[in-house]
Length: 416
Image: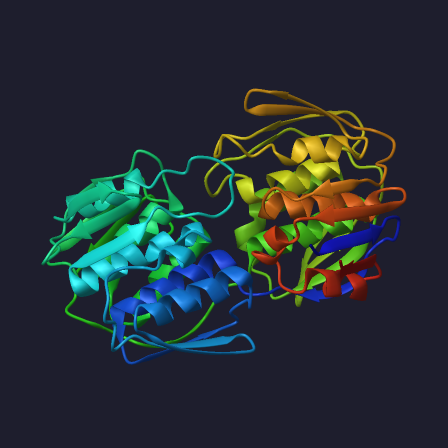
């Protein structure tokens, strides 16, 4: 098993170009199933999850070609409504092909999806939306099937502003008869990116980025060239890495508006973050101040930055309280951080973090994607040599993380 080895103590200095957003690329690739003709997606991060999604599209009959940062998809010859179990089990985002397949073929069958074990994350809201559009749902033997010879526009109120449910319903509704409204919709930048692509392909979607989205169904969508937005979570992770090491970074290819809650909270800690012509300039001097953090749906503080931020707060001066309101099982990194001398106590959905004078190196294991990033960040500041195992989790969301950190002055390597 590969591991990442880090000797902590080096301030990060230099420039990083942020990749396209994984959480945008995956639904965009799924949405290509709705189109006729060739799609060309640019700034696609070549991650494990993206490779899995491309394999899934190929298994459904699409022609997929990849090169560095570009994925071309032609879905003219989709010939099956059933997704292979061995691909879907690897990644939760696989369920996003369900809406496009249902709209395109009138039927979709997927196994219950896998991915990071950070909570139950049920897909009941996805199914509620499909039923509101006229689909019949059949469940059994670990599979979910939706059947609708013709989808019809409807009104859907989401009990929770689920990103995946909003995306899946929005995709299905693009070619439904009539108009669909999604109330209490998710407002994340990735939702806006998906709507922009679909509109470029011929859809009629209004309101993406607000809690009310309206979709007027059209007869067909046509493939397009499209550039994926920058990854706001990757950006936030490098901000955290600069902050914990007392470093100075320039982050290029950034949409600063997508990062307002992260930037505000890190500035509250004492991190200097400035918007410049080429992106964001981050400058940190230690120690940082303790702050309270509560994760919320966008535009609140993102749950995908909670673990990385907790690593920072472990060294902050004072007591911080981190409240996780999105996922019920997203404190699995706490036990590993405590192995590195962090002082953290969990109380239900909150974690009380007492800042310590130093983190000490240890052998730790990533339990999920963002937990892995948090342990790497902690290792950058820890005294001694930290070994992070289960690095395949990190590969699901960060492209060339080790190489980028090396270029910034970190003493880090990857190997067995």
